[in-house]
Amino acid sequence: MSLVWRVVILGGQPTSMLGTKLILEEQAYLNVTGMAVGIAEGIHMVKETQPDLVLLDYLWSQGKLEGVLGQIKSQSPESHVVIVSDEEVLLRAQSLLNLGASGILSQQASPTQLLLLIEGLREGYTFIPLEWLKNGIWPVTSPRNTHDFFQLSETEILIMQRVVRGITYDKIATEIELSRRSIDNYLQRIYVKLGVSTRAQAIEKFAVYSSPIRPLYI
Image 1 (cartoon, helix red, strand yellow):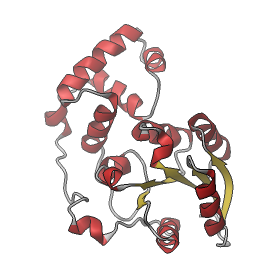
Image 2 (image 1 turned 120 degrees about the vertical axis):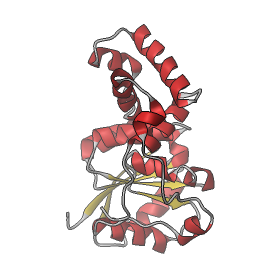
Image 3 (image 1 turned 60 degrees about the vertical axis):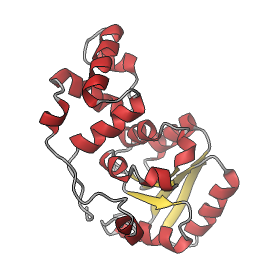
Image 4 (image 1 turned 90 degrees about the vertical axis):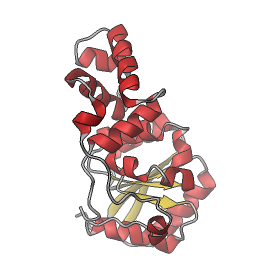
């Protein structure tokens, strides 16, 4: 573990990001190395700096949270990503953790709660609020018979694994040596099998049922 963690903050409000930066840098073990308000800028920053921690405001992703998270993890697999969210996103906590998030924090969380989460990650742990358990937000168990649930072919699984990582359809076609039209046809069949109608829904459902449940310690 690095003695000092490098942190990148991704958000749409510079004033809010500056406040978070000041809170973090009061701690000797945290150094904010960059802040970004644009998606392309932020993903490039993560790729170039390979930070220990990324704080990601869910609004920053412009409704493409799962895809953006996949891109960040593909560019910097070892980075911890903590998503700062509202209650609606908390309901998707399981799928976001399956996609590689290390923690999810409410927008109403105090600076102390943020620092406790980061300190936990530095020791190899993540935490969930007791309130989530009381309100049934956190699923204790989840169906895991992926083959029976999905009935996806090997090619369909390869495509979805790349979609989750945020890879473009044209690049997917090149990687698995298919035409772009074939990718579109595969995606339509995948949507039917998953019982969804949009890319975001497909990513969320695939992430929940195709990844093993991650324990509360890492």
